[in-house]
Amino acid sequence: MKASFFITIISLLLLIGCSSLNSSKKIKVFEQTLGADNAQALTQYVNAFENEVLKKQYPTLTIEKAYAQLLSEDPRTIVNMKLYNQFSNYNLENYFKSQLWHEIYAPVDSIWFENLQYSIRCVYLSEHGKKIVTEISSSYETRMNKDSIIQSELGLCMFNRKGKYFKAIKSSKSGIPFFEEYYHAKDVAGEIGIAMFANMIKQNKLAINDYLAKRIIAIELGKFINDGREPKKYSTAFKDLTRKN
Image (tube, rainbow, N blue to C red; front, side):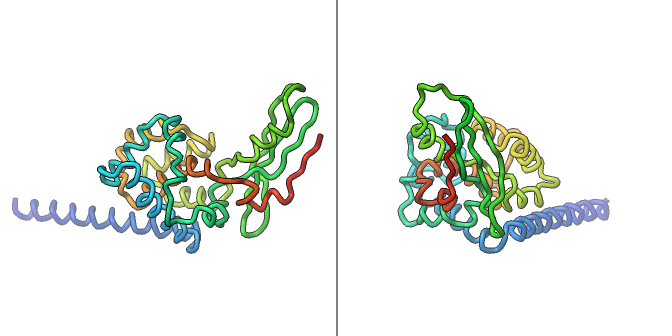
């Protein structure tokens, strides 16, 4: 009886140890895939998001509860919060120009008009050159002002499914239901709603304080940080902006 009890205890300890080791391995793989400089930049962004956004927005809540509270807000409410204005010490200009940002997002590179349609092209500004991520076309009416359309679309940036950030998620998702579901959703749709994302966290009982989880959540909420971005100022892509009228 005692032998059986000790075997059970030892087995549990080994299981916990393996689980912890597995988590460490996943973190290592994630950061190796993302790249050392990008991983360091991501850590700095997450720290700033927690200390300069969450603590200011929800000063009485713990970081974990602050994440949960922000995720529960209506998207329109989050937009009105203007989260990008909360940053004081963290340099958003450097973030928007960083390679990390381009590993996560694909900004608009070109806009052109043809046959009552306008098209936009989003690109991945990789360390090895520019790569097309997607091209999207929409119809417009002749009474619509083309310059207004251009100014509106210039601020658009798509999730970069060709970048190292998405590859890093893929490299560490195996065996973690939340990461697998999140990866699949981003792979299919690129963008997912906050309500859907929050439900994904709840359904999978994700520990928000988990090292990788915090990085995924802070970046997913980062779509609202991008509202403070001035495309022509922060992106080199617009040096090649093409207009066909």
